[in-house]
Image (cartoon, rainbow, N blue to C red; front, side, top):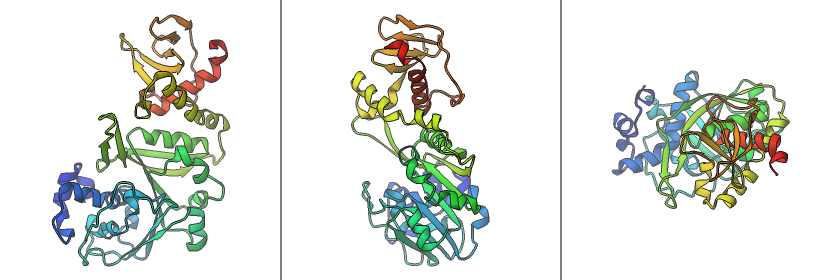
Length: 337
């Protein structure tokens, strides 16, 4: 199947003769933009739910829709991307921000013959109200749901997510960039849910922020699946996670950096040792296990014991850095101030 065989956009678009889907010629960039949401769906189905492909009268609910995935017309291409001659199914786009479209959709102009059996409907509401009115779907897709910001909504007892997991309904999702699935994983874990099998997605989208020319605005960088875990919140982990706004705000204020540079919360010193900003002009040197003063490198506290209960082996990501800072503030802030 080309959706799994190809790893680059241009080759994939060529392999499926993407331009033939449209009434008029489209550039490669326009084709990629038009097919982004449906390509994500097709790849998720091929990788994680092949038993659904081609099965009649299936309903797929795509949650948290806005921007790319809120555009109805693109999903008519799903059978083509899965190399099916046809498929009768319903796709429900669900989200209380589905009316938003900040990236400027153009009229795709697909040929009328494309995806005749695909029915696409929009539901401008949260998932709990959707299932009250429509029942549970056969498959759930959560496209870049922003779990670290909206975990209280997604994992509320009456949100519908737990009900679907209890019924054995697959829940598949993606995160914005290559570092954000880790954040979704941590916040889901704190709420008693599990995100696993995180894979890089070759068919993601990114553009540089003009303000820096380097940091990227990404969509669909990694994919994953959700499974129930303890279904009991870990209050200690949640408290650490919830320090993110305060930590980021203080870092930007104390460092003088812009919001587009908030991911620079760690650095490497001249000796190539990883240092985590902690507070003010103090950093935690992870190689020497010391809290030091920036510039002078005076040792403020030696022999730091870092509680690694919630940490992964790769501690270079933004999410892991935030956890480390939150843990050190919890355990050592009284000694520093």
